[in-house]
Image (cartoon, rainbow, N blue to C red; front, side, top):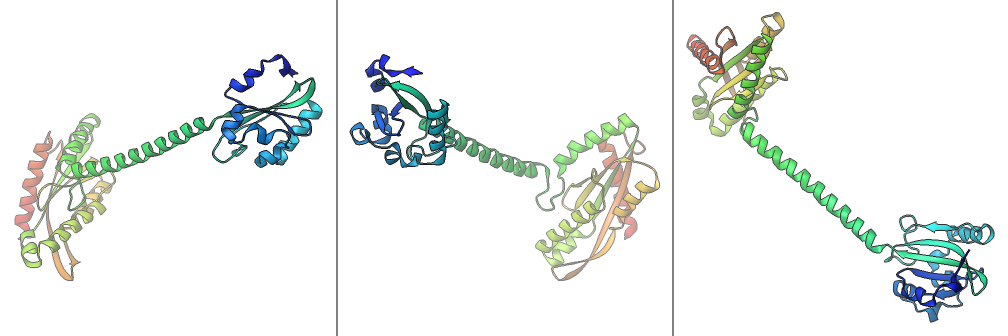
Length: 306
C-alpha cells in the first residue's frame, strides 16, 4: 500500500495530475491544485464533501462498484476517457486511476486524474485531416477520370477517340503477332451525312452520329474498340478474331446496321453505312496498312451502294 505521508507535501501541488483523496465514505480529504485547474473548483469548496456532490458525473454504478471492490478486495480500477467520456465535465477528457493508500495513518482512496484532452483533440484533428484527405483523393480521382475521358473518348459520341484507338491498336497488333491469331479492322462511313445535317440541322445530325456509335457499340464484344476516327467515320478493332462461324456472326452483326431507319427528333431518317474490313496478316502487317485496305474496301462498298 502506498504511504503518502512519506511523500513531500509539495509534490501534490506541483504535479500535472489531478489528485483526489477520499475517505472510505467517499468524502474528499485532498484536492490538489491541478484538480482546481481542470475543474474550476477550489479545494476550499470541495474538502469534506462527498465526491458525487462535487463531480455528479461520477455518481454511477461503475464508479460505486469500483469503490466497493477497492475497499473490500483492494482491487485497483481504471476508467479511460475513451469509455467514460465525462468523468469531470464535457470539456475535459481524463483517464482515472483508483487505488488504496494510507493517508494520515488511515486507509483512504486515491484518485489520479490524467488530463488527455489535448490527445483527444489531436486525434479528432487527425480524423478531420484524414477525412479531408479522403475527400481530396476522391475529388482527384473524379478529376482524373474526367481528364482521362477527355483525353481518350470522343466528346460527342462517348466512344474511343483516335488517341485511345492508337493505344489499343498497337497492343492488339502485337498480341496478334505473338499468338498467331487474326486482327480485324473495320472502316465505317456514314453515307450522305452532310445531307442529314443540311436537311435536319446540325443538332439532329449530332444525335444521329451518337446513335451510330451506340449501334456499333451494341453490336461488338467487350474487348472490341469502337472509335470515332473522323467527322463521319468510325473504325472498329476486332482482336483475336477467327475465321469461324461465331466471328463471322460478330462481323455480320455490325453489318446489319448498314441500312436502317431511325426516328430522331420526330424525323424518320434513313441511315446508310459503307463498311470495309481488313484482317491481319492477310491484308497488312501494320495498322496503317490495315486502315488503308479497309478504307479502300469501304469506298468500294460506297460506290457499289449507289
